[in-house]
Image (cartoon, rainbow, N blue to C red):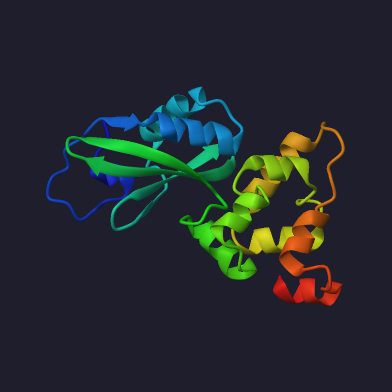
Length: 188
């Protein structure tokens, strides 16, 4: 049972606790984007609501409930009120449009939703495949947008892993083949 105040909603008359349910879609998106088993979601939610005030971003029609894997913020669950229950509708990876960090990343890079999807930057897979974290210029962009925890999480997962691919594809997409190193630095 979750009270509105636990989700960051303070301007309500009634502090009635309601059950919290997660749609299958939300669990699927969490597993797909964070590359972590969906069973973690129940444990995570139980823990944050029993320990303290979860971190949230309250929007007009929904709430973004911050999701961490260990110490690493990986995204947000989108929660809304549906009649007599709270409903987790989906999971947004940290770089997704609609999150504070994803919106900053879009502003810094001018990447649209389909661009982010094409580059796989909307899921953890890209950060485990390409050496984004090891590239100074790309790391600067992601850090400036508030996505540093994704890079730290990738570093943690990759520390005993194999060789990472060059992030050249991402460079070419962001900066074009004619862009110089100076142009890259101006963007970040």
